[in-house]
Image (cartoon, rainbow over all chains, first blue to last red; front, top):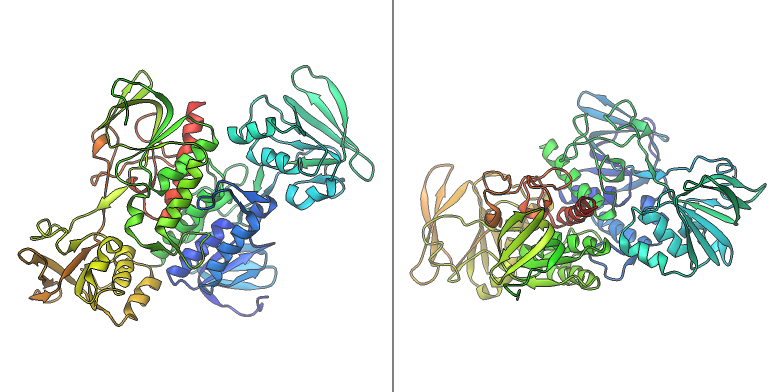
Length: 309
Length: 309
């Protein structure tokens, strides 16, 4: 916990300890920058919501996300970069220095890397909020084991939705994958794998209109976009993977962002404020993967190094 | 070897099997694109000229570059993406298809990723060309063991030069690191490590004017930029790490490049020709590291996937 009166001055504060923030820390440490990493919830970020990752280069056959993050963290620890669990509330510039206000105090720093990532986007239908933790979930790894031999639905059409459907089919007796379109954004290899899985059935061109149940999920109301028909499907779990929202509210109005709140940077990851950089999933970009988030972490630290010189 | 008459048509041909090209292959395979990788010399590219890498995320304590590349290659092999050893001579567009001419034949493809990397830049002084392989080297890993208990010089001021000086101090009895400036571009952690190494001494603000020796290196003529004096230093080896030149001659005049021949792309890695993408060290960018080359490989494959849809 920061002493509210202390003004420890850093070369660099990294906000977020997901893959991109950790790699920024690794590079900053090698540049010998006096660096602090602040993390709101848990080291690893969104990736630890997935059980494993198959497409990170260097790990044939895949690796558990918890192990990958442990390896990243070891590299940061070896450079003696501290990681503190504190939520950042705001950044204020003063005389070329930035003051970082957290829930526990204040820090001063010459530069900032925002690697604050994203959180799951809600579906926005009736029953969703009320039934979170009572059958509504945004994380297969966390909650899958609770649905052994139960029937569940998975919502979404990207890589994450299909990966989670496959993972959840290891617990649930039946997984219905509901997607608003015929085609998937997911990579073909995942789509094929789901289609060959006898426990997964596809409900395409369809959307959930309501999640029903009193104290726990009992079913979903599904609207077909093909013929506009409405039907109810009984289930005990609803897993929602319909996109991500950036964790950038603490700099809203200060930095240039797109409408959804993703931070706009140039190729060297400068934001619209000098000395503040952004990398990883909180950035506006076209591919949201661990490997390019890591590449951006290295680039952001490099840009800070040049900026401080 | 390609049949000169055959016109096998691919979704994607990746030129170069260094880290960036291999990761592009890994992602292309997961998108189920019919992909071929062409490599001129050896899988791994420039990175295998270094003995090990410390800053690739996921490998605390570092990993031998040969092992890292083997791991990348295994992931590509697992997806049944072929890697052929053929040198690309040119690319010609025809009706939305690209014809790739190699030394051994022709291939047709709907899209191309250029990941052809770089090669070492020569110092450009007298004696250099004549004494290559006779004491002049661009690769510590390759040639270091030949200089056991000998005196050598290392030229350059970036990460690579310092890494190699440290590595070579394990063989040579004395390493003189010659750099034209007082300060280093290398990361501080490397600079400190070299400065604490009793076998490495620094000759700063100095340049080599000539490499001397009849049939093998016998010394170097060093000009001080501080006081313009010239002196000769006896040595048996000269290791040169003064930058890189992109391997892009086969597309010169076709794609937009900077003066040095680095390919100019947008953030999604489109080159100036539709359907041709570039990633890794052959691109104009500000940081040349394995991790961001890998991130770009993923991005390039993603951009191809979108382009083909």
